[in-house]
Image (cartoon, rainbow, N blue to C red; front, top):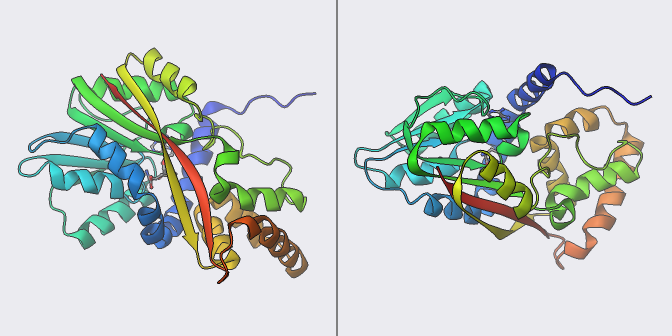
Length: 286
Ligand SMILES: C[S@@+](CC[C@H](N)C(=O)[O-])C[C@H]1O[C@@H](n2cnc3c(N)ncnc32)[C@H](O)[C@@H]1O
């Protein structure tokens, strides 16, 4: 007997709950993650061509760093709305903007599928690693197009295939090989669901976008060693936090040995690691 698909509303509620509980881990890892992924933020911000006085929206903003880069470029007179579906993320972004001394940013809890904004309210929309988590991605992109003025641009990032993202996969592979998970990949909606230009292009086209361009951005995630990688992966990939917290000492030791073996090809002489990843980015016009 095959399991029936999950009820979409229950799925939405469980995804949101997971992200609410992830905000602390993301805030803690923010410095390193922001630095390692800056090339993607720059690509996205350049792609929407921010101008002084414009109104921009960042969706699924997490701690908000990508939008904050754009906020400086729309001064004077421009306003960035930094949003996320998880209120704990919105609060973490608000705290970060205060730290940065930004004064032209508003904060709103906003769901990707029901964007609480007026039609044509924005000149540009940014969404880094967010649309993959919408249960109905076409609805999310149609909503995005609705809130953009005609000719306004959306720039978004997803991940390419799992095998091109060792930074996200080594921990999953180690857990799977140790028999601690029964699936190598997380269930859909997952980070790797929009992994090709064809999938992404079709989705954007179906939502009515034009002038679609895609590109890949290669990234490197630096870690002091396997333990450092393990701690961060567990902090930001919340389902793994829950799984790992239930493991006994022998299981943890086994997991560490497996991770050390998997990380060996990426290890430097001093034990530090450089784990690669490849983002897929896109820009399109409403
Ligand atoms: C992988 S994180 C990316 C965060 C940030 N954009 C970045 O690049 O660092 C995914 C974000 O999407 C948000 N998210 C997931 N589903 C969402 C939804 N349906 N509506 C709005 N935000 C959502 C999560 O709360 C989380 O902050």
